[in-house]
Length: 345
Image 1 (cartoon, rainbow, N blue to C red):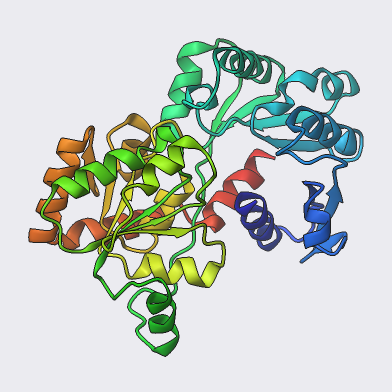
Image 2 (cartoon, rainbow, N blue to C red):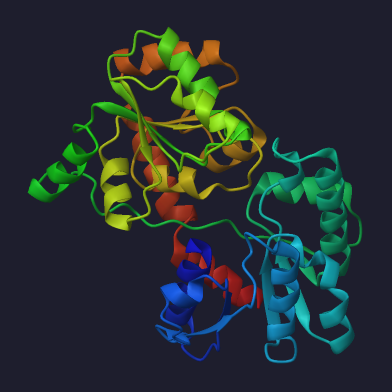
């Protein structure tokens, strides 16, 4: 949702003549009060919810855009089953595959095979794939031949609340039991491949004095319940926070940001941390390294997490924060991303 909004708004600034349409989830109709325009962007509504009927949602999305838009950008692999439809009608469909969805630990073997099939169909039937990570680009280059590949990363904004200390900011932090620069932060979906458990175990084994604040919707499943058993005065579960001002304030005042994602491309949460000048500590994999470069720390297991919690509380590295912020400004600004998409279109 953030990608659709930020990209379209930036594209409107780049080229006012562009006619942009976003296909919205059925549930968004109530949220948007059934409006059909948003800041110059056309909105159309699917009859289906992606949460409940993802296959039908993608089919309906293609039918809604078929013959009406010269270029369609499909986010995710779900459209792979239906890409023959626009191909027959002469439409151009570009697919942004995001991360390696089949690697997520929650899927059964049957779903993994299904997602791999969607990946192959999307690679072969799309006009081209837009990879938001250099590591994802390399994956498709080595796995498939004779397909068009384009690299355009995800974008981010620079956090406007960095260095702001006033009554409004203090009130937000106080609401969640936080204080300026006195907590480590995790912002993540609470799923196994995001390694929140690994971060918690390393934190508990360390001598860290600052709190660990975890932002993420706590679902009613076994994994989330196992995480909640660690809740105490120092390990805080703040729930899902979707208000932009609130999450920006919490990011801007964190002592460090911990990123356990292991299967994504250019992850939005990591970019937002970089755009907040956070000290970033990431799971050690090719996706996170290609995004952050050498401007942070990396861990592979809970022992390394423990070591890093102790290290960064004893020694604060300003240079890494400054370099990560500079990288976010230079390489990941939405204006730059929009210009690259405009050239591609």
